[in-house]
Length: 545
Ligand code: NAP
Image (cartoon, rainbow, N blue to C red; front, top):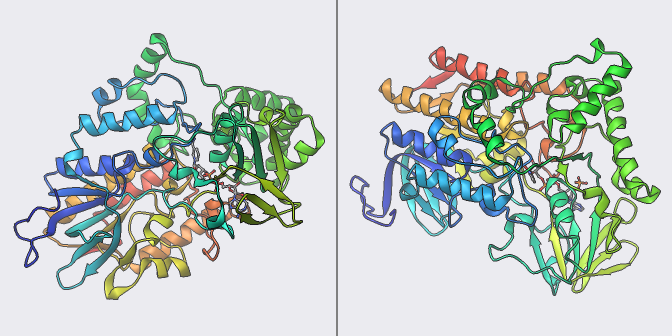
């Protein structure tokens, strides 16, 4: 579509002129495109992948599935759209999720406005025309008034972390680049590096089919067992009947989930606390983390008690002292990194064909043609190496694009100095650039993704509508507004224990990335209220020109 000549595009007939361009066709991008189109704007999306889905298009590794209940991982703006889709289980897997994203694109007829297979290379703001010029790596050009980045929180995979990757003779691949046609692992000697939420799902899934699985474990994770019942007609009816309740409540809770912190630690006796922890643990979801005791995020002693509760559960399942030393975390508190759900993950290490290799004791030196060589010289011979090593979270998708604002300032250079935004929605110096899933908002890490992305894209749609209705051309947060938000964000974050723990949540997984808690820790509900206040004030603190 974008190849055709476009009226009003100036001298170059291959420049596509738009009111708004959305980068990405994942959960946020699809809804953003739909809303702006409904508002009557000329809008398109540009998407690197061959189809819609974003994270659920790319992450097709074995075992990929939701850790949010399917019925809350939903768009809630249209009751029929919600009710016409039926999940088959509580925590659906990637193929079903991808089908759901296709269903959304079909129902809202979105594909006709998406340019697939195009990777945005640069986005430059022109101060003379007050418009963005966006170019793809294949040379397609978009000239747009508004630019909305729905480029993903976890869409920039970490690459080239190990010496010698290119020398490996077998298959070596990042989990986010799993081939659509699958990869035959049967009877293979497989090594996997990384035991985050992704690695855990892969490990527990492939262990029975491979000849041998070597898991290279650096930082172990607190894990919670998932309860994942299949849904029959009664369960489906029950969750669909909750549409209104979910629509009204999800946007008010701390993390955009259906549950919230309700019980104070100090109000319970030790026996009652244990009883509650057992209940939460038995829920088989993220409730224990996201709606258990909020105090675990703030108080070392309470964090330690809850952490020890989870460690006890893990030790009881692992039994073996060496496995316990390798796989039970002791260096950080429960919930200060993303807590993965699992299904038989710990028991997987009892299989004869699965070996946990503690790389805190003997690190990875390099990848060699036939496997992985350790610092003590040992070589683990392998046919396949799976890199479940994570992403340059929240900032990486945008810093891999040459984004330039007023005066040619560069977003990647700005964020290399200090990761700052105004409410994760805009950045001073970059008029009409809107962000989603960006730093300093809950959507950067601490939120049920669709809840936060719906809230953000709805705010952006209203804001763009306001600029147009006011007869103005641009909107941009004032320097002072950004300073105030960064200060508020830091004050809120520094009261928690999250900033003390290394993980992608603070950017410590990327060499040289300035450390800052990426997600706003004041709660998604409170954040939503603050966003509403800004809109109701007529965008006080933002300059329209
Ligand atoms: P991650 O949480 O960042 O984990 C990466 C893993 O790779 C960690 O174990 C890390 O060890 C290890 N690693 C990285 N570099 C290494 C190196 N040079 N040497 C050895 N080990 C290395 O990434 P992820 O597991 O892909 O998960 C990222 C996020 O995606 C999650 O937090 C979650 O938000 C999301 N996710 C969601 C789901 C779901 O909803 N079901 C599933 C998967 C992922 P260290 O910790 O020691 O650095």
